Image (cartoon, rainbow, N blue to C red):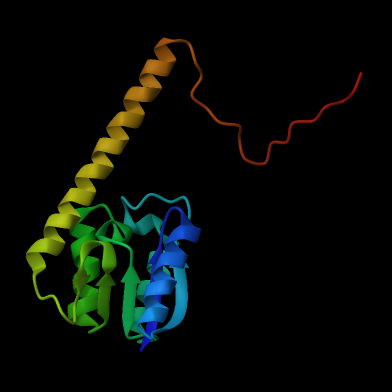
Length: 158
């Protein structure tokens, strides 16, 4: 079976984990798709997932493995649409080991849908916590900004 892997966040750990699962099942990894540092909240912003879907429509592999439902997305509707297209429209096997989901052995849509809802809820909680943290820091007079990309600090001597 030719397999594609979706990874996001802590890339090395997820790739190692999913590759181990693939190898222990005798699956050949076609390609690893990743969205490093990009939120799973909106699929439109995820070039790795969009590339996976393009290749899926071209039938370049027969299965997709991702760590969990939340790696597909954290917007319930987009996540469900993506999974439906992968599994039902394209007939591609979807394996999510952390959520115990495999289209070959598990026909329960309820578990998948519940986990998609929980992933979206967790994303909203994280966003709220970050906003509260920024506000609290601002009230203490701390600037909430990182160094801009492409800026290099130079020491000019003297």
